[in-house]
Image (tube, rainbow, N blue to C red; front, side, top):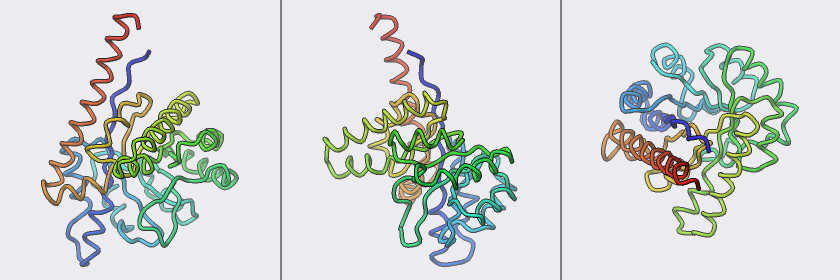
Length: 263
């Protein structure tokens, strides 16, 4: 068995912008939140420019691209407007997500199967500009296969259902959803897709996700920004960095022991 790769930690700064927008003005500055997160151990920054601009705004993306000394992952809907914005700024990566005006946050994964015809040229346009493209999907075999067919570089597996079962104290549902994530990650990696995961992750539920060896990146936002109200954003990111590195290190150690024992 191949030892798992180091895992990257992406921090979503959307809700620093949510707090700013609640009162207007410029504070707290999402760019400052991004810098603090990188200094605390994050590897990259995620920002979701929604069509309704409810948190991240166009000028935030411009500032992040101009000043951030780390890769930017732009989350966005599959619309002509967002394609134009991505091609203007050319972030390191774009993660294509479903988006509905009335939702509080992204609810479920992108339906790649039903939207393949629309997605293929959209992905081709981003990749032609040198942008790494991920699709935010549920860990469903048909969606994974469709993501490969659509030409994506990566998938981000939606962990929200697993996290909800964990927080609701439903062990049977939690085990079922974790098995789906494990199978989806294996299937995606076998197809040559890079595997990311995110949505609803916190200090308590992240360990089992990190222990899926095919996953090489986590994207976490709401929990860490919220925890930052109590301990500071930098400290909340540092604590997550330690937890995911420990979990991945334990897995690596166990794998080494298995090789030595011949199991």
